[in-house]
Image 1: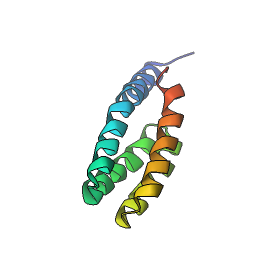
Image 2: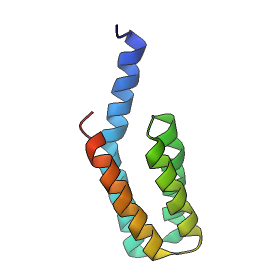
Image 3: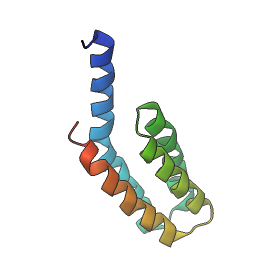
Amino acid sequence: MTTELDSVLQSLRSSYAAALPEKIAHLRELWAQQNAEELRKVAHKLKGSGESYGFPDVSSICALIESAAELSDWQVIALRLFELEAIIKPSRQL
């Protein structure tokens, strides 16, 4: 039996999942610009919101991106962005 709260939470989760591709595209733009500080900030926000909305893998990968941005490690950031894109594709179908 689905409660009203369950429906609201599922709706919020679906909206969050639908917005992830745009957020990842923003991370990619910041990576291309080599804007480490802004990239770190965006990754930090996604790290927190991912866990809150039930996407722990998003949080884990964004934590790694945040750390790599602090070091301006562009190769690690690129690798983690590919991982992030790979895990959100199935989530977009929620």
